[in-house]
Amino acid sequence: MSLCALLCHTSCTSEKKVKEEISKYKVTSPLRVDTSFVKEYVSQIKSVRNIEIRAQERGYLQKIYVDEGQFVKAGQVLFRIMPTIFEAELQKAQAEARASEIELNNTKVLADKNVISKNEFAMAKAKLDQAKAEVALARIHLSFTEIRAPFSGTIDRIPLKLGSLVDEGQLLTSLSDNSQVFAYFNVSEPEYLDYKTNIKNRGSNKVSLLLANNQPLKYQGEVETVESEFDHETGNIAFRAKFPNPDNLLKNGETGKVEMTVPVRNALVIPQKSTYEIQEKTYVFVVDKNGVVRSRNITISNQMPDLFVVGSGLGETDKVLLEGVQKVKDDDKIDTEFVAPREVITHLKLYAE
Image (cartoon, rainbow, N blue to C red; front, side, top):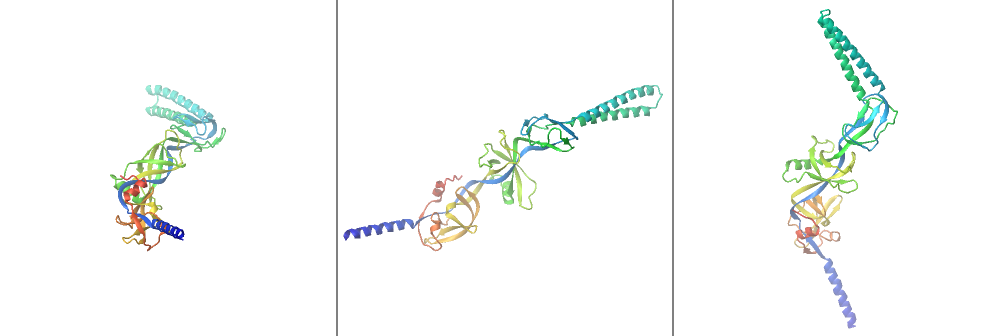
């Protein structure tokens, strides 16, 4: 009988101890810190130079000297359009120029002897000048039959094949200079104003690029310029960052995410795990001096790993439930254990300035 009583006493004591441990909830307070967080912006990647190569003359595509994806140097011949007609036109213009030159020489002899007027000599000279201009024009047209690379870069798709009839202005290929690339990303009006007006505290112009496979580009870029006006539909303005691309990894038209480090001065932060959401609104449980729990709606101005920056709804002296958010409800009375905010941050591995 005494053994049963002992067992019963031991069991009751254990249950009571477990119950006491469960009812001991950890709380903390928001912390005021200077810190920073990384914000991601969806970006569109463009080559520093990307142009369409188009035919300047009509004719048959006689030669293709390059292949798709090939790197070419500035001045290298890419295509040749059959030059026969333009060569003939040049020869004709040269012949007319020689005839005009002979005519001018004869006219000069007669003018020197006062056989003809000076005006006739001037007309002969003008005719020669016109013939020389026709030669120069014919040379230009002939040169257009050779399409050369205006700068070094990579050849894109070549839609036409040998022997195709090419019209003037028809697309032959595209050429991209990917030695450096631009990343364009959109920034909201408040962020733009903070960036432009808070130069001292906005941090570095250096940015990183997260690629589509979630791997970072090993080279940092720099924000260079901002567009001149806002998009009236989105309320955003485009920023441009330039990234080096010596490995030729980035191509025109790729996507990625620009990562910008944004400093936050005098921020009020709380652990993300102390919050919960209802209908897209964020709440915390605030514990008063009597240990009574009450939910409170707060706004979040920024987010960083494991932490939220509070926009409104909390003060530095408030006691916030740190753990057990799913186990309590409004007006519950609980026993608490206070954990210093900086200790909480240390465990969350946030490094504040």
